[in-house]
Image (tube, rainbow, N blue to C red; front, side, top):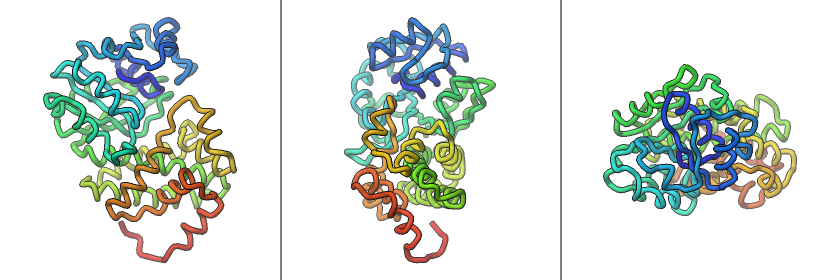
Length: 329
């Protein structure tokens, strides 16, 4: 397991409960020591007891040495650099799973593209991408969770399904890698937007409209990149979108709530130990949509608030007074 944030720790716990030998790599030695010595990840997943069988290290190669299944759960903006560090020493027949959600800021590439460029050719045919509605704390506490694994290699996807299979954790599979990735990345931007909406006290009508129109925008981007539109109706699309936009455990939603109440972005982010993926993804998604020629007014507004200093008070008027048009993708 590469990455000991909340999500990586939760997934490691699932694999341990399924009877697998799991070693998790933590960038911070104190996090690794906490997991190993105390059976806790007090920094990123406080209050959750971890399995006794879970091993932890701050040495990256030690975590992946001999591993048949390698799960990468590092923040999306660090995925390329970290993958380059371990890719040459990993088993050449290992199945690779990316459970991070985001778009690389400097290149505008999906993480599947990043892995294509950083993994040896022998590993690229066994890449999988895990997404869906899943708060780390609920997974670690063994509350029922259903996700989806995307891969062009059906055997690899089914291997991941069976590896994670528990009575509380179910995995479907699909071949639509692009759709699953876009849904997982852009829902974080929409969660910030929904948080802003709720923080401003705009009501439930506005929230429902925002989530619905947000799904339209996510689908437009996904289809423009070659995804199947039906994927956006599934777990990685509307499922993850609904959870992240409405659930109080959503970091992206909490950032939006604070902004909607007039708080300062830097101060809000500084108080959170975890990475808030939607902040960087908003900028990457805005650039990507412009390159694709896709209309994304909600993404554009979030980008403007986060990165151009736009006041949230003007977002409603700008969105509500756009030219009237047919409801269509």
